[in-house]
Length: 374
Ligand SMILES: *Cc1c(COP(=O)(O)O)cnc(C)c1O
Image (tube, rainbow, N blue to C red; front, side, top):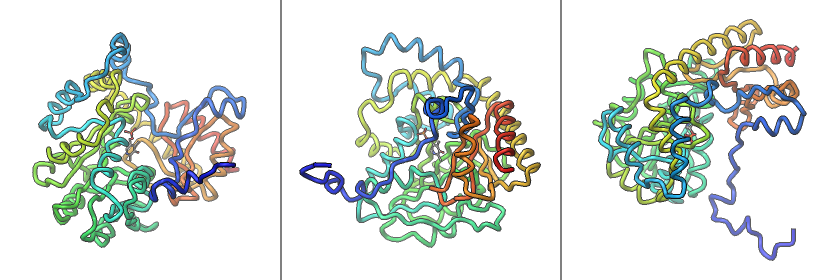
């Protein structure tokens, strides 16, 4: 390269050392590279049912309005959410995916002098969002391999890392890529012990799927803890990953701050319309959850048959120990038209993460996996 200047070096320090997010391999790319068709993508924890029919209609109906800017305040979606969640609308901040909300929190509350705490094996966006603003990252060691919640968050390790410089704690419940979760008792005790000037962000991207009796959403705790922020998304159980809509619920002052830093029109017009409609499509959500329960069972039985160990999960995916390098298993599955996610970059080199698919997709994956491991 003949640049007169090194434009990597010129970037601000957090960005200079940033490693970009590695998304699931797109189906089109696999089709191009291997000439395979009939691809099964179980790599991004997407809803295998496709989008909610009501949302598709609403998105289509919204398209005539595309010449205009969307409602920058997202009034209607925030009203509907406020009603559903029994919170006031001024506690809700909409984002271009909940990813956007996490970035807004980092931008508003972190800088080079302050610290963010999150777990080993946690969702990659926590690293990205906090690194981009140059914050100091304190990584809490996860639960040991021999624990019931192996590789899950260890809140005692979080507590030990809190300091005067901590501004944000990021907790995924359940976590991705492990699927592990925290009991409501443990989480509440943790939040209660965190100083008021530390925001506790509880990422509930998968909460709709959870049926563990010891789990509860942190949302009701917002009434008691001003420093709590709960994030949610339409990308998983609501089947709208391609639209990019998420939100957080927080103290109104935090929402006020996030509103200052967000792009004026961060959620687009079809996305606002689709999300409102999705909330009303209760039949779709029910079908999604039923399918997920059956699919998890199918995958667990398949792994049991193959003698493979998988982590405790309350989400729409399983993280399974393949007893060898996960990226090699990922590669070997590609020519068979199966896309899963290697998680070596999450510190889990011998695991792959597989999202729950339709029954026949899970079957194809399990058959291909058996062949690859032979
Ligand atoms: C998928 C996921 C999200 C959602 O991201 P969006 O930007 O809303 O699509 C958030 N947190 C975790 C832990 C996830 O796995």
